[in-house]
Structure formats: structure tokens, C-alpha cells
Amino acid sequence: MKLTFPRFGDSNIYGRLLFRELGVDFVVPAPNSAEGLERGAARAPEDICLPFKLMIDNLLSAWEQGADTVIMPATMGPCRLGEYGELLAVTMRKQGCDFRWILLDSISAIGVKELVHRLAQAVEDSLCSKRQIFRVLRKTYTLIKEFEKLEAEVRRLSPYDKTAGSSKAVLRTCRRALEQAEELSEAINIVRQSKKELHSLPRDMSKRPLRLLVTGEIYTQIEAFANHYIEDTLMDLGVSFEKNISIGWWVRNTVLNPFGGMLAEAKKNPLMPHRIGGYAKETINEALRCKKEGFDGILQLFPVGCMPEIVAKSVFDGLAKDEGLPVLSIVYDEMGGEAGYLTRIEAFIDMLERKRDMENVLSGDRCRIGKHGFCCNGR
Image (tube, rainbow, N blue to C red; front, side):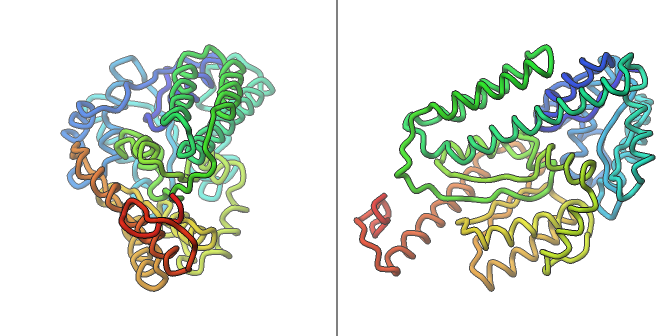
């Protein structure tokens, strides 16, 4: 067995280290690229979404490197991801790639016993004992948590850097080091050292950056190529932001605590009490939190044709109208132009700055004339 899975976010880092320590033969697909997207789009069903097209190229790349088994997350329900496994299998067979498939559905859908059975299939070639396997799994999850905490700190602190881009540089260097790490313990130490470097950087905490919440469809949030590297763009624009949907979030809510998370969400989400597929319910949860915690605005990211996020957008439209909650929905497809996306983001940020400045004027705060020609509270 030679294992692979579609590439998104930092899954290639975690997967490589995990299966390396388990002694399972593993193939890392080539990084997502414009050429790969073009190849995937040419072989994808008509009107399918961007993630599917990228996954086709990932699996073609893995097949060319000798992979014969695919492990991937799935979610049963009305979202297309509920059909991804079967549809991908059919599509890949048409391309001459007859993979064996291991689909990791949620415990709430298939039960604990079946999920354990499927996970066991992924490590059936490993010579490790069950205790060793669980130890490696715990260390992998520790790495995911530690690295995602570092990412969250960089997103929050980067606007305060005295040397612009220094926080982002720490994160970039850490990620490159993780790609070269030989084992999980080394990787965890790399992340912890990077945290120390991040916290040692000189900062100007008197700055007042905008605070945004990034939410939307899970793949588009996690995969930087799919969202045109929006996190780098926001850091370059001096925005402090949060993004809570991640690989670690998926593990916690799908594998480790699926029922507790679902019950908590049902109580706190009056605008969408039922699941409609995908993670639209979580998107609305984020919007409600944004209103309560004083964020300046929301960026909703999703690919063309994503039904759950289209429904979530309609809820956002109502919130924007009734409660004055600023939301920018960015829809991605296979078009590669950067300028249009950048212009919209810059205009949204400029609008939020003007809105905040005007609120300061109306509140009677003492301030001075700012860059937009009126009060901007000393900035």
C-alpha cells in the first residue's frame, strides 16, 4: 500500500511526519498551482467547485508517483463533500487511476466502530503496536495544535510589528523548517522555538489595527492557493484577524468531540438551528460571535457553487442590513487574476477604517485629523 490524500493547507506536513513515524509508505502530492488547477478543471465534471478540481490534480500527481490508496475526510449530507468520495473515485477511474479509498466520515454519521475500522486500514502496513500508534497520533495532534496557535498569534500580532513583515517571516521560516523535519518531536520543538522568536520581536502596541474575522467554506479557508494567499494580503495591509476553521478544528469537532460540539452549536445559533451541509452553520456561528466580540468586519470565503455558503451569505446579507454588520463575501473560481480580489479587499478595509473614524467623531473622542481628512482618533 502506498498512501496519499488531497493536499490542502499544511496537511502535507502533518501527513508526512505521521506516516513516516508509523512506517507507512506515503506520497505527498505536488503543491497546488495554476497548471495543476488547469489540469484538474479539464477533467472535472461540469459546474463542480474549485476544491474538487484541485483535488483531481493532487490525486493525478500522487498516482504518477506510485500511490494506490487515498485517505480523505468526508461529510455525509447535502453538501457536495458528502458525494466527493464517490465522485472523485469515478472521475479518477476514468483517468485510469483505480485507487483504493478510505473515507473518514464523522462519528455521528458512521459511528465510532466504523471510524476506527477505517483508520486501522490506513495503518495496516505499519509494524507499530497499538500503543505506539496512539502515541504517534497524540504527537501529531500536539504538533497541529502548537502550529495553529503560532499561526493565530501571527495573525493577531503582525500589525503591531515595528519592522513590517517580521511576524510573517517567523511563520514562513517555521513552515519551511517543518517541511524538512525528520520526526514529530523535532517538528514540535521547531514550532515552540518559533513562538519564542515571535514573542521576542519589537512591537508598537499603541497601534489600532482593524480586527477582522475570516470565515467561510473550510477548504477555501485552509488552502492558501485556493484563497489567493489572503492571509499574507491581510498581514501586508496591517490588519489583525482571526480564523478558527482549521485542520485542528476539524479533528476536534469531527473525531474527538463530535456530539458535544454539535449540541453546543444548536443552542447558540438561532439563525440556523439545523445543519444544511458543509460548514454553513459554523459560518453563521462565527458571525454571531463577531457581533458580540466587537470585530470590525467579516470576510466570508467560498468557491463558486458552494450551496451551504450561499445560504450563509443570505443570512449575512440580513445581518448587514438589520444590524450594520460589515461583511465582504469573496467567491473564488479557477480564474487566476489577483488584482480584482486585492482591489475588493483594499476597498473593504478602507471602508471599515472610514466607518470607525466617523464613529469616533460622533462619539466625541479627542483626536486629530487623520489620513482621510477627518478625525481618526490619534492614528
